Length: 382
Image (tube, rainbow, N blue to C red; front, side, top):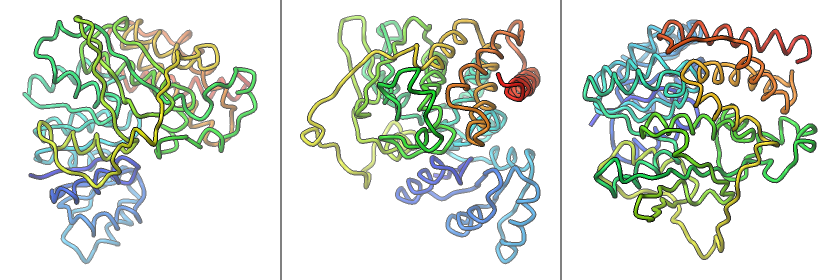
């Protein structure tokens, strides 16, 4: 077996490399953004044939760092796409944001299976990606813990019509229980303090705003071919039940486990088989009790905006994702407040017109315009 890891310097990518080492699976290619120092460390550790960085200057630095090896160093998007398209048994796409969209298509062309953590690919171009995978007879296995849970529970049924509803769980993030008024005063440090999961900065903020769950709502529609009315979001602060599926006979099947991304990453690699892990086992006696609540759409409007976009179509989903990436970027730079994020997103959804299902080229044009609008609106004070 042979693997590639895209987005290897991020949280999911680093976990994926740990899993591949645990499974003794060699790595053919690595790709990331601009961290040449960490990429050098990973390249020496994994010894891939190709190491690629989006940033050309960082790639030039990496070439110097790896001059004493036979590793081929590539730069720019073309370099990342070459690394993504290398023939492997599984390609793990853990790139953050819409930057992972073209690499998803490239990975499908080269790998037998794509273990997909880049949810933005499906949010922005889900129908095209699923059609492409089907045409090439390639597998897409979800890495997100929630979608992995749904995927696993659906193995219990052989008929598509047996599924009645997906119950998509959410931890609620660090601000669970806070009112919209209280959220006006939260800081960046507060937003980055997730109670259960260790993740990258962007996805941690998305979790705090519940936008991450909104993106996962759209992702679930695409992966499992269900409508928006077949998905309910359930706040489950313990993050033990990773999602549930209700079937037409009244049965509800859940997948449980500790909050460790190595578990769904490994399952996406080894499916349909399971292998032992080094993760901490689940102890329900330590947990004691599990709780469930409905989401607060007033305090966390990002979730409702994502559901609205899901109903309006793919163009709205592209607008939503781009506006969110831009708004979260400004929040991480402390240029806007946490509560400004949904305001900026809603402004873009309301004012940027998109008709029909956009092509890949149009997706990136919409993305660029949505980002411009967010920055322009933020500059004049929302």
